[in-house]
Image 1 (cartoon, rainbow, N blue to C red):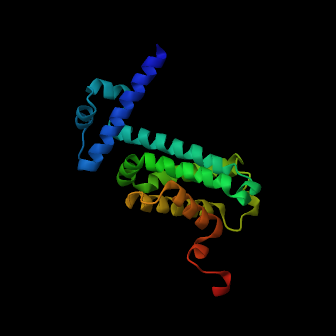
Image 2: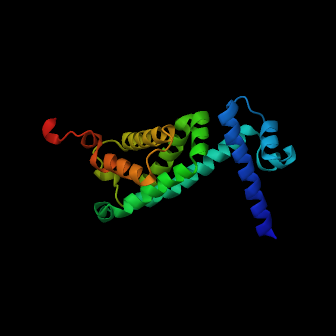
Image 3: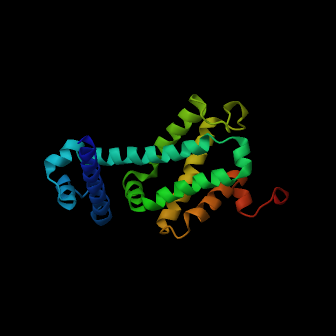
Length: 204
């Protein structure tokens, strides 16, 4: 019986989230109301308030869920060893999974980024990276004592640069495949932006 209830709750929450995304696309978050959401999702207001306090709580919970999904994929990358990175196949497969998630949830991602800005998402990811990489030592590849720059700047650079690439891809309608984007991002990440720009150490 609980399984049936859980499925019903998941369906209800999906209907609410889908309504939220479509309404943000049509009129923007500020202009929409809970009544708009319940009408679009074909539910009553009581059902909405069983799960969310208001539209802001809905947006915050949606952001938290998306962040958790992204974190789970990023932790796979954080746990890689130097041998894994040299091999290149495993990290590429994980980054492909990340872009497949973004593509499958492109409208949702765009709605969140348009509403909260990517700062909210970046802030959550930076906190997670710091916690797992430097507080829990989950990352076998990155060691704080070996860093050549302060950790805070490194984390900020990685988060901002990577989300910039993702947002550009989403804005362009996800023209490249997740596989192509994974190669682009890993090339920039592991070889550096100057290498990706066609500059060698001899030309600097």
